[in-house]
Length: 579
View 1 (cartoon, one colour):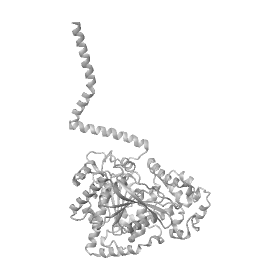
View 2 (cartoon, one colour):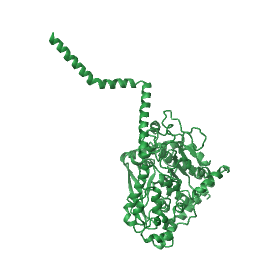
View 3 (spheres, one colour):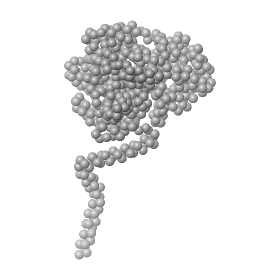
């Protein structure tokens, strides 16, 4: 009897131990069964998202990251749009808003550019502006899929810029490119990219002003190569391993180096259509080039992703600490690499002590700031007067550079010659600007120069509620639908890439159609081509003297007041090349 009782206790103890060991597994099994109920699954997902959102709020407060005012709308499950704060109507609007003057090109884009219609941009957490911005700037998405070969271009002042050509992809990429071309040929009934020319178009990519290829640009280059573009990347002097042979860096809105680079790229592919896209602060030299070159530009169309439209306002607006430190780190690393070369013309130590982007830019390029800090270099006294040639520049080179051979007198005069939109009324090619209201690196969306887009037919603005800075991440559902439509694996979930490349195709198709119709645009296009050919070979000619700024902030304010009183007018794109 005793043995039977002992055996019973041993068996009970064994079963209890087994139950304790299997309890976690049984609990997980029970939890998985409960989560199969739709109601429980929905409430669990909401609880997890709420907990994650509160944790993200704490992280943003610690890192001093600003929170967007439309945050509560872009975390909703139903995808409710945010309020259109610019119109002041209080009505909900799903992005993007296409803000432009009513022209034939604008109507054509609305009809044929499906990417500008109603994209489903990602919601939180993937749609958070800071998450998008940091991931696009720092995180590699698809690895190194392209190889580049570099050309060094000698400029008229003795400086050197780097030009990188995308020449090869991985073995699998060539097959993907052939599938894309075959699909386009089937859809259009003609040669892939035949809407451009018989030869592939050339895409000129302009990175951020501090240089370097971000993952965002690498993915754009990857997609452009897959779609049949020749891709070339412009690197300013002294950036990304480009040797610095002159004791001067490129000012924010100085397009002289880009102008010579565009002429060189055109000489390499004279029969190809040339288009350009800039990223972030790289828009400064792109917009300046379009304004200074006018109708003599080799470009057919241009686009700017998250552009800096008002340079002085951008430098004067305080950035969040993380972004300010990152931007300063990039600029200081660029300058410190050539510190010994600049010590003869600049107080490098004082520049490296600057704590804001404005102080850095002003101390580096403005003579008043250099004199204020009391540099001991004898050259600076001559630079401030503007009557002596800079050290190391021959008189002929100084004459060719004009006023840019000398530092600006002060901060305001620096922006008189470097504001990106100073010659906006001279632009003669269509420019698409893609901006987001929640961009953490740019001034508030209410400061955008909307009168420019309402009055100038060459400027188009695609404004979205979400997107961050160069983010614009698509929702997973839309990416999958796009992949099923194209019968291939989706590799790019960035809406701005898709919209920009399709925009170039539609614009080229529109212009070619206008020329084929034999209208007045065709004749003006031929005149434009002849003017371009006459300007070839002038790469070593001195730049023409530009008048004072034409698009200052005061003028923008005045145009905003006058735009309400003027009528829309009967502008047609056929008269767009008569400047």
